Image (cartoon, rainbow over all chains, first blue to last red; front, side):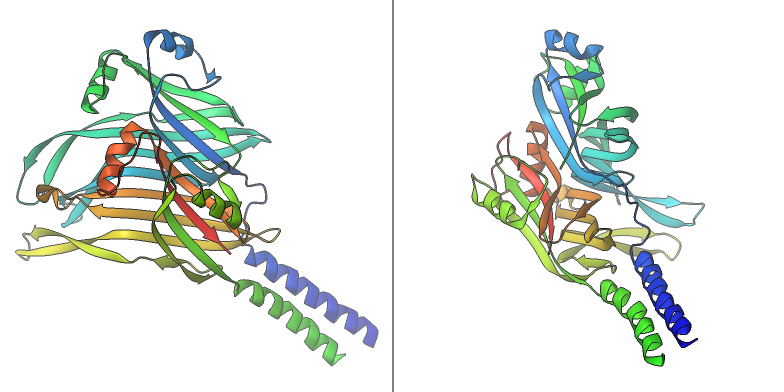
Amino acid sequence: MKKQLASIALLLGLVLTLVLQASAQDNNPQSSVPIVAKFGLYQLSDAQMKKVKDSRVVTKPVGKKLHGMELLTRTEAACLLHLGSKWPIVYYDPRAEQFQVQYVDIGMKLDLTIKGEREGVFNVNIRPETSTMKKLLAKGELSAYPETFPFVIESRMPGMAWDQTVVLGYVSGLSARTFLSNEGLDTQNDNIVYTLRLERP
Amino acid sequence: MKRLLLFSLLLGLFLPAQAQNEEIQYRCQVVKASQAPKSRIMTSSDWTKFLASSQNMVLDEVGGIAQVKHPFLNAPVTKLPIPYKDPRPNMYQVQYVDIGLKLDTHVKPYPNGKLLVIARGERSLADPHPELEQRTQVFIFESETIMKRGQVAVFGGVNGPLARKHLKKQFPDLAFSETDTLLFVVSVK
């Protein structure tokens, strides 16, 4: 009888240990994979553009790199990166009956969530944004209001594999020239391409 | 029998309690690098070698000791006021923005002795332009990854000619070439 009770007590202790240790893990997903997401914005000539225009995957980035952003993340986690400025705009919200401060983000931003589809293959939700301030529209008593020119792509890229460089989107012609001139860059090669690459850390 | 029961209960309570009270030493660095590191998660000795090579430079740093499972904040910041007039009480109100280097982190235990590091780093500067005093220049990352103790993780990086004009505003006294990269780095041990 005593032996049975001793065994039950031991088992109870072990079960309690396992349960408490499991709760200490905070339900972390076991299959989460660390990833480096590398994003690039490139300026291309017409000849370079022809090669990538209808491609989903390019062998290596071509053209002049305008900027690069990279984030170390893991699957299933939302992450962001921002280099630039935050411009506060104060306004009165009549519904809340109080003043609110909203921020206009200028510069380069990357919002990213990578989900594992199967081993080595990922679905990527991505929103890169590159913006510049064109001018201040007005400077009132409380706020200055910047007129911005953002280049944004919001996309879901399924089936991305390791070390693939994927073309997320492009802009050619007048819109590209407007963007380049607002950024103070040469407008002769008026093609801009956004690319994304996933690498092991 | 009673001893065994007591021992089992203590075992059940003490082990997880010990796991929850684990301490870590953390460090967050903003680094100007002339080249990208070979890997983004590396040992601290590899990171030290990387920093010593070429023209890599730590520009700003915060660090300390924290407890696993408890969020922690290290923010040696200046509070920048944004005043606005509220017509209802007919008086001015002030909202504050933090300026400086700030690390907001939550480290959780992860299977196989690893750590899940959830971090938000921000390095901000009040705009030097006198007419735009409310605007702030920022470098922000918000992400999470899995690390081991003694490792260094490069959470974020930016480079290129478009980034350079923002980097010059962030660090007015420094020169940045088109290939220089600004990195946000977190280490735990």
